[in-house]
Structures are given as C-alpha cells and as structure tokens.
Image 1 (cartoon, rainbow, N blue to C red):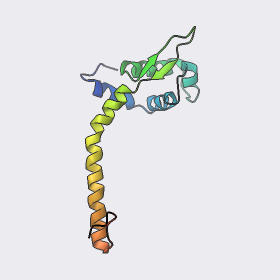
Image 2: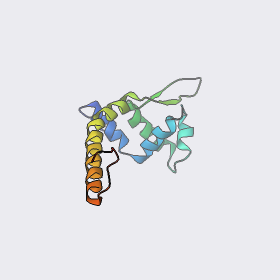
Image 3: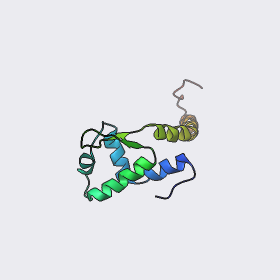
Amino acid sequence: MPQSRDPLSTTLAALADPTRRAILARLSRGAATVNELAEPFDISLPSVSRHLKVLEGAGLISRGREAQWRPCRLEAAPLKQVDGWLVRYRRFWQGSFDRMDDYLHEITNAPPKGGKQ
C-alpha cells in the first residue's frame, strides 16, 4: 500500500479491506499469533502476513515478542481518530433522523417522542 499523506487516509485505506477488518475484530478480543489470525480465512499465510503488514503500517496493530511467538495486538489510537472524524457525520444523521421523526409525527397527528406538540 503506498504511503498516504495523512494518518487518517492511511487508516481508512487499511480498513477498506474486509479481511483486515475481520482481523481487527478478532484482535479486539485479545492478542493472537499469525496462525491464529489465519485460521478462519481461506487464504495463505503469506497473504495474511501482507494484511498484517498493512495494518501495522497504519498503526492499527503492533507485534510483540514472546519467546518464538510474535503476537499481534490491536492498537486503538487510529480508530479513535476515525471516530473523531465521523462524529460530525453522526451528529448530521442524528439531526436528520430527529427531523424525520418530528415530520412523521406531524403528518400522522401523533405526538412526537419528546412530548413536544
């Protein structure tokens, strides 16, 4: 994956692949080895390793050293940056849903949830 100009773009590019998202979901339950991460996928270990390299390059995972094992761990900071970016859109959609709820109550003559008339 070519290096992006900013960390958010790098994170979003890494999250664009469903296999990488599934790997992150597994790591959200705790550290795992490459073999453990590869189990549910019908792809080769080198392919899993390439996905891990992308995730590591985006700062989404780290690899430790325990004897001969190199467990992978989820690193949440880049996900927090994505969440911070998404918050404004979440507010937009919530406001849109609130306006739609008010409108639906208005056209059906039902009082809105908030008790406003």
